[in-house]
Image (cartoon, rainbow, N blue to C red; front, side, top):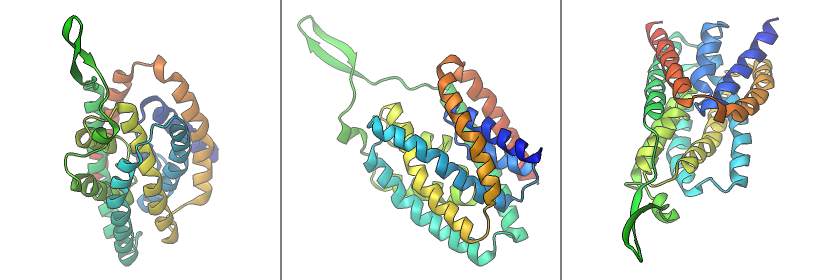
Length: 274
């Protein structure tokens, strides 16, 4: 019966990810901690590999559609992968199961969930519109919408910003398994304002794969991954993501995201209070 509950939890998280695009870690890690009593370090480590496997499938699909801006992915990985390795080294020296590290993980996870709640609400309220440009026609100048060139769209406001924000997200993801979803999309919206939203989401999903894989395997080497639990969660999440993606255009996205942001904020406050 307990096994079925894990499969159902995976299905629920996969469904929400498919519907909203919000990172699974924002939901899966607090569910494992609060509802199943899983230790924070095991919840984080298991969820990182859960995210790596689920997002890898999404990246393959996005690659086929030629939506992934690989130079943006590279800039973010240049900061996030080294930061993840440094964080894993610190966890290795301190011991992931020590009370101090457990407290750090729950507090940081709480803050990350509050940030994710804010980012989710921001995305629900503010939908991006295409940038207007002036086009000269035979009837005179008119306003139209046109995409920016790929080189301009994938150029950040400053070259160092994607690396710095990547390092911040890499540290956050390795400590909490949260941050590569809604927070990552919000950062990309700010750093690459000319990049179309589908390519923003594609970049966020694609760079999360190597990050969560490196962080997840690092946690596995520390004994922080429950492999049977991971298989049960994946058994539920994969059909859940498929169903969510099919229903995406039939649900009121703003209402779902707004409700989700309230839920994440509540979970974040509870974790900080632990």
